[in-house]
Amino acid sequence: MSSTELPFVPPANVLPRVAPVGVEEGERLRSVELPGITLSVRSRPPAREGLPPALYVHGLGGSSRNWSALMPLLDGVVDGEAVDLPGFGDSPPPDDGDYSVTGHARAVIRLLDASGRAPVHLLGNSLGGAVTTRVAALRPDLVRTLTLVSPALPELRVQRTALPTGLLAVPGVTALFTRITREWTAEQRVRGVMALCYGDPGRVTDEGLRNAVGEMERRLRLPYFWDAMSRSARGIVDAYTLGGQHGLWRQAERVLAPTLLIYGGRDQLVGFRMAQRAARAFRDSRLLTLPDAGHVAMMEYPETVATAFRELLLDSGELEAGSMTEPGAGAEADRGVRVSGAGTGDGARGSGTAGGAPGPETGGAPFGASTGG
Image (cartoon, rainbow, N blue to C red):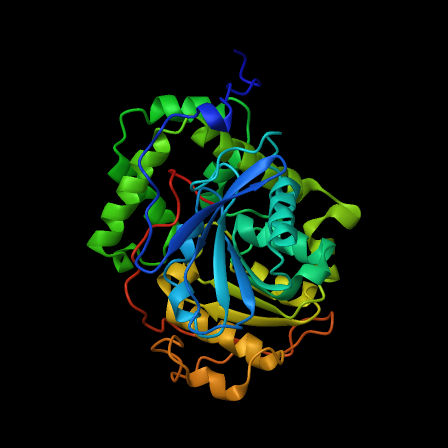
């Protein structure tokens, strides 16, 4: 097989049986069959009936479990679900093998159309940020608000620490990498990912590390794991090169929904310098910068992110002021983390900064490979 050929991936109905995906206390998993794709959806019961729906979308190599620290903090204001994108988490590969940003966005749109839950509060991290940006631009009827944590939007000058992720998109590199790392243990891989994705890897608990290692071992048994990684990485690179109305920055300018942007000062994958450009691109934006956070702020500082999200809902008229003190707001709800300002196409009116506000140690790890994005 040449370096440009992709490995054969068996159909979903003949894939090998592997260990079940981890589920946190109070969470449920269900499988949703749609034309051409089957998606795994993680949810937890809302605090009360009638809350507006929310959908969480993870990044490259991640899964719906990346949102498990944040979801219970918001179950008093939204009825949240987190999706495993095709080929990730517990979702099998798509029938057409399309792992492009547009392909992932199409999967999210199909899920929302079929669920009858839209419009939703849409949240995305990294690759999920690019995907949800495209969804919000193409289908504004599906989106109430948009929250982007370190979104993978095009950068002219990519950080050196992000280059390994981009190299996954090069034909033959994935096969070479798997040969080189054949002797690596699951724990070695997980620790490498944590060092790359967290501002402070020490925030991960021992239990979180064990869970992540178990998930890594599960993923490495999947015959399509590296194929999904490499094709999705290629999808990000391809999206970076698109111009005109299909370019992600052009689509960011078309987003109508009130948008919250969250960037980490220690992010090794998405440049912190992109925060201000993003605030200018989204017409109705609010910006929160977390100097001590890495690439997955919703896992490192879930209380801070939860408070910022609630501020977004309050500022956009989606939440009554009295709801800010309801259970689930998080320990930092009274610490003065404020995100305000609405952009007018020339940037956000204001921005908030939370300088290393402490949150509880997170109970998971972001990605199931040695790179992330």
